Image (cartoon, rainbow, N blue to C red; front, side, top):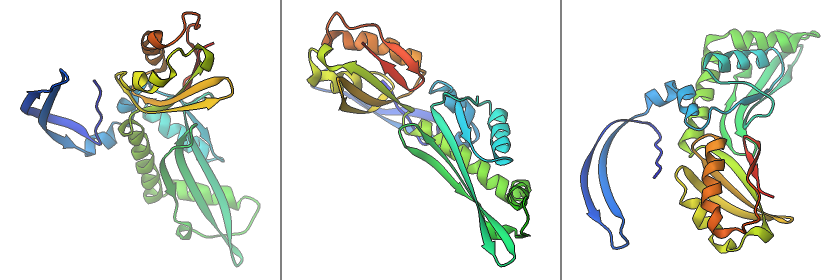
Length: 249
């Protein structure tokens, strides 16, 4: 059983329940959901999906600013990361003066974007010189309004990772070891915390892409148990190559 919400459930109560013909139970509840606390607890929510590392790709001094903010939120920064904060800067010519265009987005390695922030280039102009880009960036980052907008976008982006059902993982299985490939999608979809399952072929492998609420080790354990019924006994134990790739041989 798994569920997710765009907010935090403050309180709830059961309104009705009924038995279904297939042996299941349908339950209707009333829930009071608060949105604001969700935005304020990005790091706690990220722990629900395995406390992923975040890679920062950005020019200085923006890179340091982003790393400091992540550290303050309790989010670890690292190279082999499931999520990436990617930032770009471009100097815009305005006569003899220069303005700066900044963009920052949060995305995963599957290409999904969770948040995007752009500054207001008209906020500041400076005369052209060899250091104008870094000077403009420092001014933008020192601005309370610009900094607040950036941090708000980052908070919302990490919240979206949780709201969408967790991080995307890829599970690679040798196609010749699948005894019942037609059941793979159904088996994976029944795992608690798993959503958005998609199946594809890549060379000699069948690749399952899915979202999972939990850490990669928990997912590996659940997969080993679930896939035993539709795979050959010679299937190897699952190998965790990194936080987002799991492989069988």
